[in-house]
Amino acid sequence: MAGTVEVVVDPFTLEKLPLHLPLEFGTDPETAREALGLADYVDLSDPILARAVAMLHALTVDAPTHPIALLGGVAFRFRSPSSNSIRSGLRRPLHDIDISCHHADSKKVHAALLALGSRHGSALTVVETHADRMFNALMGGRRLRLHNVSQVVDGHGELGTIDVLADEFRFCHTMDLTSDITQAPQHRHTLTLALLLLSKLQFIQSIPVEHAPQVPGRVLGPFGKRELLIGPEDKDVRDLLALLLDRRLGEGVDEISAARFLEPLASNWGFWTTTRLNLQHLLKSPPYDALPATARAMVRQNVEALRSVTDRVQPKRRFGFLQKEWWEPVESLGVTSGLGPAAP
Image 1 (cartoon, rainbow, N blue to C red):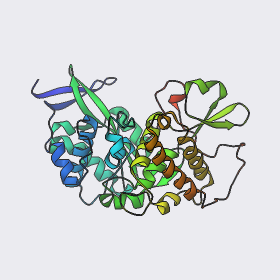
Image 2 (cartoon, rainbow, N blue to C red):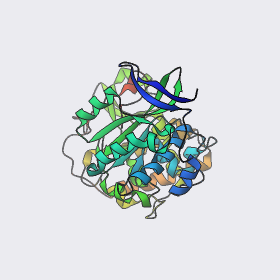
Image 3 (cartoon, rainbow, N blue to C red):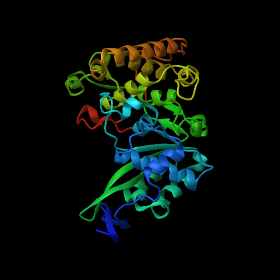
Image 4 (spheres, rainbow, N blue to C red):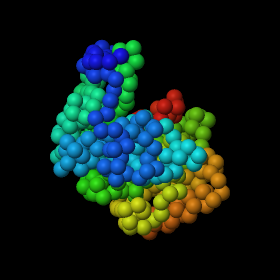
């Protein structure tokens, strides 16, 4: 099918969008990758990664004064060879594209995203569905949700999610992203490696003891008399292990800054506690056990170094360890359905 057609982008409201087919990139992803200075190991055969690279390049063209920092699975692909490699055992499927910007820039970034399809090729078409508009209004500018048309099947658009976070990452714990967003062009267009790690290490949730069989490999320990604590999903553990396999502690662009890692933890006992528990559990996780011995040794060295760094600070404890949640509760679909937590 070729030419401009009306494509259904919302199956509930039957909202339609004029879309030029076949889907094409104005700038091919390989050219975009080179222009952004991304490493050759970034595997553009993955269609979501290819779109993310082309989208980021287009945003740097259309909004050059508004820095964008990627996070989530795409960002780990940008920074870690092992997360791209099929043979590493740590590559996992991508589903969404997660970006962050300054709150003051969010309206302009929002508009730039919605204009990508007309300016940079139909493969970068971004839509804001009726459900997205309702969600975005409720979030008050702190977070935006949009969708990218990944392909068209029988007149219906298959959509991938684009999450836009403004200034902060709010999940089980809150991280201020402002300095990382400003520095993103110097950090391969992602958050710093330290905050990428903390974005995954911060997940924690309590579940009833009887739900333990539904989350194998994720139990951190007991919580009170009838509950258990669980850590990150398998996909997030794989991202963490890949980065810890490939990078070392240090203050270079491609190193994990101990100072940046400690900054969100030093005055937050809850975040500090969650991070310590999840670092400890990484070395007991099924993906870690499946690594070759040499890879396990490298990961263990980095995990132990981060645990030592984390123990340098002792934030003031505000409440009892087993008496009250020290994190923000989030809906955890993964406990009951295997779909994973509703994270940014």
